[in-house]
Image (cartoon, rainbow, N blue to C red; front, side):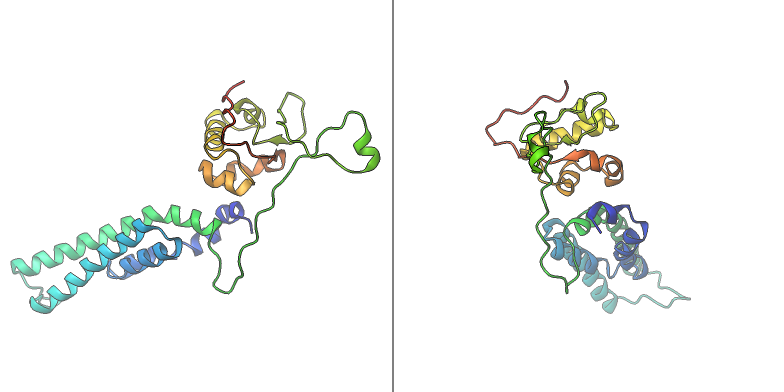
Length: 237
């Protein structure tokens, strides 16, 4: 499955969101574990720090319960120390659940584009799609060898060929059916990265939900990327 197909699959999202159950079912005690696992796998420092903070809080709660009489479930203790520990436990539980849901969206994006089973080999390098140029003199057709176009392909009215995402304007993308806000986000991300080598990187860099682009995927091509010194193209025609 491609990354966008994974993100569009409800079953895949549910299966890879199981980590949010850890803090819920453990009353927050195991929330630190899922944060640390996800942080280490994705090499996200913020998640690792978050897991370490929750681990310290969990350890403090466990140690505190050894020195404070918490009473029983049917007859809990009413002392200030017992009430303080109970309050910290509740706040820790709620906070770990909230944070688990907050980071889950970014975790799914990382998992779809970079995650793979431990037994899988190294991911293959993404293929760069190129666009055959329209050969008006018929030589390419006669020799059966399409010429790869290095220039932009504009989405003019009635044009049915692929649009080169690395040379198109916001208007070109809007003529494919994208709304103005989505087209502008793609163009801005493209200009920052000096172009996209493939569809997956475009989706990740622009932060556009993949299902919004699947309908026009076959109408997009990825030609040569611009050199960093080349001036940025304007958004609108």
